[in-house]
Image (cartoon, rainbow, N blue to C red; front, top):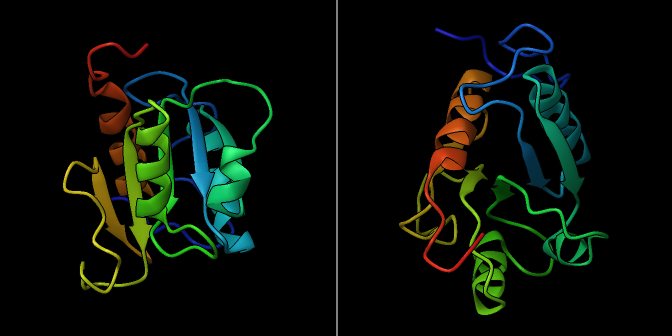
Length: 147
């Protein structure tokens, strides 16, 4: 059983060890600066590249067009919510594997993340559970017509 991820971002895996899917580009969208930092450190310690954003709008305005292998997305955000960001991306023709994170146990209270989410993790969650969810999400095949 893995250790719980703490706010300092201590990783369950050895630094530099890549996940089962190999090094990935993972985008993290969370309005809590300490959570963004902890998730960035966890993902980097697992060998991944992490880009962090404080809001859905900041993610949509990101420079460059590198497509993340996975999106770790808080359900409740200022402005557009996590599920709203997923809908906006879909309208724009972009479907990303999503791991939702939330502090709300009730899915209805959490804004009902889409049923096709790769995972929904309740904060605080185990760091290894997040890394495993990211690996599973990134391994999902893209919808037809997307690359």
